[in-house]
Length: 118
Length: 111
Image (cartoon, rainbow over all chains, first blue to last red; front, side, top):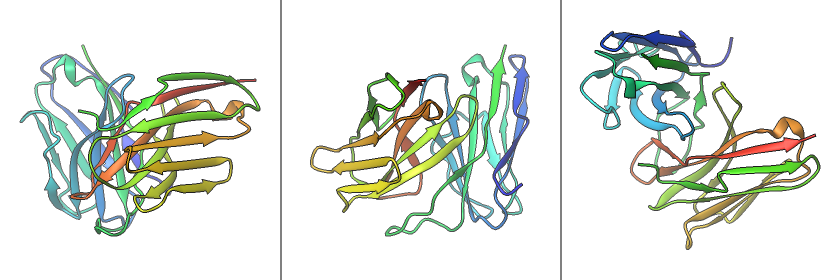
């Protein structure tokens, strides 16, 4: 398909388990974003990549969260030793080019991965 | 913390009526956008308004922006049952590419 895809769509983890969430951005998109959306809330920024470089990780809530995009396309968000408060929908978005102050490039969102930590 | 705040939190109307949702934000912005999210789905971009624009139209959507009040409104005219969804405003600031979302308005359009 032509859109952003994420897998798995649903993940149930036991507390303390490690999880890995995958994002396949639109082919050729330079920028990739991860957001966390708690139930009934708006998405909150986690981290941003431009190609393989992680330019902003200020939104990652703890050092248990780690994201990578080694070849500048597919990205993985890893959460170690999951806690119940990590339960949320994790959204990935990509945009065609890097952000330029005077211009905006639309972010295209994937369907998200719903993580439930028991 | 959320920069944007939408009101109302929930809105229920009849098909054919207009729906108005408001958004307020706190810091300077470059652009403000509105997104729609259907239950269990990702976000769909609806419309973008730049900080130097005051009003924008797209089909049945009308967006206004008042930077002096740090607020925006989204008007959906002649609503349809298919418009039932959550609507979020999002801002991108003057210092980076991240989007900052509000908490959303849940719109229900009854047939």
